[in-house]
Length: 269
Image 1 (tube, rainbow, N blue to C red):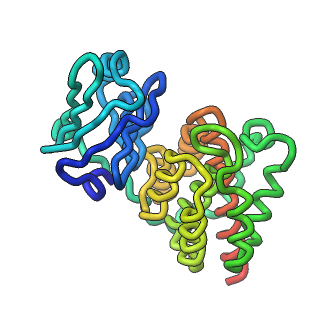
Image 2 (tube, rainbow, N blue to C red):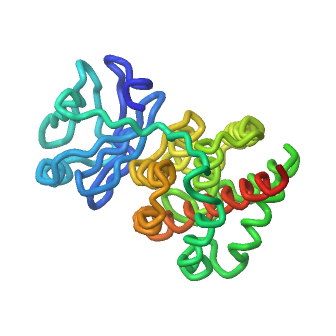
């Protein structure tokens, strides 16, 4: 998504720094800069691990960043650090279209049974994963979707709250499957976004999903569905789970909810 949202001479600021990555906030985009070992997000780049390690020694929150001529100039207290985007390979992270002629929804849903959502998700014991799935599945009208989104949006702790990860997982699958009521869901999510109440990083991921983009791991999962490689489905799903403390599991729960929606749709045809 970077070429779509970055303009020459855009000014940004380092907004967050982590052990292996950092975020740069530009006027129209939050860019994640991670090492090559991490999964690529639709709004980010990955660079050589060794160079990333050298960057993290100097980069700090508040450092100014200039994007010009396909380069990031990061003005740290020690030196001006440069990342050349022209040296990187652009990866297509658009959500691929999926159909269910080579693999059935029942097969897909069955694979999700290996995940212990109640143990690994991020919303704790106050709610149950099945209750959240049912809430999403039964949200047919705009009013019901608004109520569900108000419940999920910003709920939970972390850089990307669990409720938001669930939303992203659900919307990603409905988008890839070209769900008939997709526009209604998208409009409901856009309206909730405008009200605020979550992190910048989470907003960035939700906006990317609304524009039809996702992570490299999600694309890999969806491409397995495209070709109907049922044996590869569980490894692709577990790769998504292995992201963050609970983010991967929460995303999978949203995906699972979407597949139950699609299953109901197909059974009523």
